[in-house]
Structures are given as structure tokens and as C-alpha cells.
Length: 419
Picture 1 (cartoon, rainbow, N blue to C red):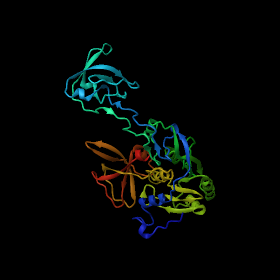
Picture 2: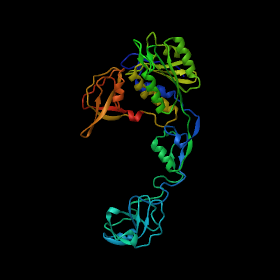
Picture 3: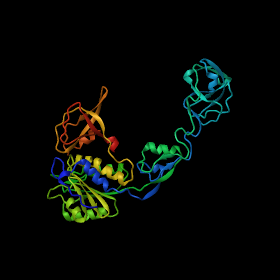
Picture 4: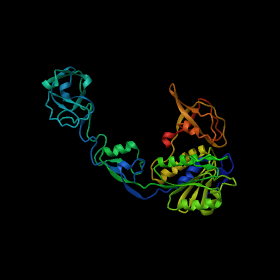
């Protein structure tokens, strides 16, 4: 990995800074998907990334079955409304009926196999029953019936030997259900990504300990761990590091051993006590630093030993936002996931916002009003106001030199799609 020099024509409105889009491309250019795979049971596969295409060994459904409760018939017997037919059998889900003779009907329930000979199912709401089922009865079909109606054909969802899911798919609950429906109990996934984390700052302490004057609780540790665990990473938590260059170098060496990625919080700015960036330059390579965005300008990216490195800011909201924009995409690509790009949608602003010199990410909550989806702004947008991230359900992206007026269309990034 070579150091990336920022040219004058690469800079944004703020001198020496690169754009968010440039930063994402530079980060992703260094993300090579891991090659190691492992076999997992489907019960342990949530959020894992498939390492192979998976094929179905069966048709789904496995047989023609009824899409609703009603009566299986020969459509030729029901070409006029009011046809009356004797009911000769009753077929529930899990039962197999007998061949249906022309001029008769079968009482059938949702999911039950359609009997041989029947080519349609009439919903029970369109039928009128005469007599008791246990004494023999008839049914009047009060509609004209077309062949094939209300029958789910064998293989119409998934055909035998067809590809169910492709390699690179990150498995959500619905994908697990899909794989279970074709009988797949084990398959190969990419191994878990190993991510080391540590936090700098003599002012931060862990929850449960008393606060001395000038100290704050380390919220970033729990934000980062939660984000990484949600992405199914193996987290190596090295805790809080004293604000000295020697301690930072030592923990950075330790973090790089046997890991794929090192993520830190704090220590990458320009303060005299910010040692992470200096330690990275001494031990490895600093390839990118400082982005034209708010919150989260000081984001460092590079490499130490064989591990990639990402240094996030120290402010709580900055950690959250920069992880979603940069670390998330990096991790997904390293995991071999097929879809690692952020996909914004358009909503309507319910607020005004001034022109900005750095690309801003505002914490908002969507609210349905009439036929429009409006983005409402949290009143306090400071990078230390973590309650804004908890209140919000997404981010509105404000481009450089763009002014927002109430009623304007804006780009919205949903937390639900990012987390």
C-alpha cells in the first residue's frame, strides 16, 4: 500500500481535505476479500457471507397445491355460474387425495396437494355447501372457473437444481428461511473477520467506575463493539490506552497480530496528545487522513503489518457516522459481500439548512404527512450529542455549497439499511 498524496485538484472547499466519495473509493481500493471459508450449520449462519452458490435439491413447492381453502374441481364442469357438484373427498394439508372424477369436487385446504385430474381450486367464498360433510354433500360453484386458478404449481418458487442464493450474499433471517425451505442444513461461508479495537484518552473511563473531575464515560467502546458484532465480526477488544506515544505504539503492535483490521477511536487529530496517527506512521503506512465532512473530519486509513487500519474520531456521533460511511463498506468488502455500497433514497426536508463547506450528515427522523415522507431534524446536531443518533432513524446528506429549504428533496440514508 502506497501513501496517497492529496493533489491540489483533489481538494474540496476546505484545503487539504478529500471528499467523502474520494475517501470511500480509496478505502475500498485496498479492501481485498478474505479467502478463508468454513462450514457452518444453518442455525449459526445469521449475518454470515456465503462463500459458494447454493442450489436446490428439490422443487418448491414440491407438488401442485391449493393456494386457499375451497374446492378442487375440473374447470370443464364449471363453465357456468351455479354448477352443482357432489363432494367426494376431503383433503387437508399433509394428506394425499385420490384421483378426482369428472363431475365431482373435493373439499381442499390451503397447502394440500391438488388431486390428480383437478385443474382448478375455487375459493370457498364463491361456493355454497349443501348438507353435512359426514353424510355426503354437494357444493354449488357460483362463478365461472378457469383452468389453473388458485393452484400453486410444483417448482414455481424454486426449481430443482436451480441457484437459490449466490456467493457473496449476506444471510438475513429471510435467506435462512429460504435455505431451510430447500432442505439445506450446512454450507460454506467466509470466516469471521477479525477486528481489533482500542480507545485513547486519559479522560475516558468505563461505565460502572466513578468519574473524577474532567473525566467522561467511554461510550465509543460500546458503539463500536455493537456495530462490529451486528456485522458478525470477531472483536478483539484491547480497551483504553494511556495517552503516551509508547503505550500507543505497543498496543498498535499488539492489535495488528493475526487480525484483518484495526479500528481505533480518538488520537488521529492534530492535538499534542493525539498519538495514534503518529504511531501508525512509525509502524506502518498512513494512506489517507482528513475528510471534508461533518461530523468526522479526522479519519485516518492505512496499514500496520498485515492488517488494515482505520482511525475514527473521538466524538461519539463522529464515530457512529464515520463507521457507517467508511468502516461498514470496508468490512463488507473484506467479508466478500456482494452489496457493500450505501444506497440513499430521496425524501422531503422538513427543515432549512445553510450552505456548508464540508459535506454534512444530519441526524433526522422520517415522518409521514399526507402522501409525503418528511425528514425532521434533531434540534442539536453537535458531534458530541449522541442522543441525536439514538433519536434519529437515518442521515440526510448535505453536499458542499448546497442550501436546503423546507420542501426540498434531499438524500437520506436509513439506519435500517446500514445496520
